[in-house]
Figure 1 (spheres, rainbow, N blue to C red):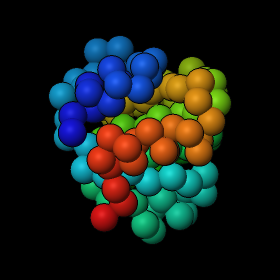
Figure 2 (figure 1 turned 45 degrees about the vertical axis):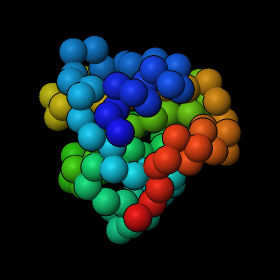
Figure 3 (figure 1 turned 90 degrees about the vertical axis):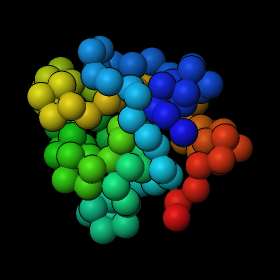
Length: 113
């Protein structure tokens, strides 16, 4: 599934305008612990978190993640957005709580495989 499809189907708000959303999303991972994401996420996954600080971009870049979705109306810091644009990491936001957003991603066919 393409990242653009997720944006449309889940009514996500893209915070990093200008970054190509035509990248493939091969699965999903949910965690707020950066070390957990580093150890267990896979390239091409979408990462769901409530963390908003600069280090999320570094982790997403390191792991080759397709993007980051922030839940519960969390808004990224300006430094985070600047770094995301530099690293070409899409950041999207959702008003949904984590549990509901992940349920919708699962319904759309995303898995953690």
